[in-house]
Image (cartoon, rainbow over all chains, first blue to last red; front, side, top):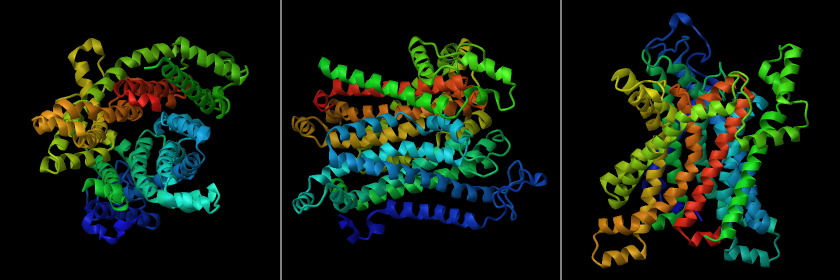
Length: 281
Length: 315
């Protein structure tokens, strides 16, 4: 399947390595933020409020005197954690559902696809609003709301790919050899769907980052004092006229991360899917 | 379009709306516990709580309450808001006067940007124009709409003072009402336009490779004539589907963007109601938004079948 691996991906797919490098930067910053930030991102110091960038505060301070760089780093960690858990949640439910529907066919197939169509009508924001009374506003609420929206995405991708792989000769051969449908699904279909799932997961991660930012901005996601990019933007909004820098930093962090993940997703798709490459050539 | 096919789709629509209302009711009314206590807070006096419980009919079985609420929605009775002391339907009607024009402006803007840009990129494939357009759309998808909205305010409202930074003067104010919606509509349209430009580009590239386009070229049409007369219309089919799917993002976007610009629309209403814990308003408006997404997708399905009769058999 991964015949393109023979080529040097860095040379043939520039978006792959540009995206991978951008994503690696963000992941590295987030990992560092888990153990160290230049200052405590939650420590308020009113005497130092709204300072412009200096040697002590590379990106300045916000209206409570908190260090913007430390907040942005800690925000990266939270943003990635929420999106990662949400996408894992979507995959954990969506992939088995899609696989099962494709292997069994018939009424079940129809039912799973209808339900996933239905779930598409619930954007993460509205789900988060509905779940607010149940879980309270916070990271968990955001993870579940974004996760639920991802279930049908992964169910559909898995279903579509599994349907076409199911008709291949090697699957028929395994069936003739007496393997059960379950074994065939796990041994032959799933490994072949995997590249597609990795690509989709990368793209969904970028959408997850955007959704998490929107939820935190609206006060439905990560709660203060935990720093998050969306929260920082919300705080910055009333200060746009005097300190636009406060809105620029978290905004650019989001754009950089999402752009990196999207480029990585595009590059991975081109690299992992030889059929697509042939069509484009 | 066969009647049986239409009836089946209609039954599916009714079922989806019923299921959506059940989900909303279960998540917002049953699972969190006592709605009266949530609305009034844990320190509320017992007699006030009892009065609200009686007003909301919380002493009745859940199934009856659900049926009452769902049938009320069908009649246009969305319940009574606790904070505003008016029927929710009245609030919704008032707020739609902002949300609906905003959504229409955003969709119009999306199409105005995406269709020509996508067509231009496809017509000049692999040129500098094409790669520039593709790069811009890549960036457009990555920019959060509410941040873009803030940047628009910074440039057009704070620095240049061309347009208002927020608020809505009401339609009686004439052109200034329209001006108040321009920046919000642009912010809403950006990510949608970026996605749709890419869909339009790839869809057009695909149709340009079809036999009928080659025949048209063989008859002596230039590439751009063939594109305009034959490929463009056929390329619109996937664009229509994606536009329908994007409607749910547009609705979510409206809720956020109305809050950035303090526009008195449905999104702002639902957000204020969350903070005021006015569950009656939140529940009905959320249902209304989800219902509109389901209905729009149903209409897209119908339009799809009208445009391409081959799909009816498959549906």
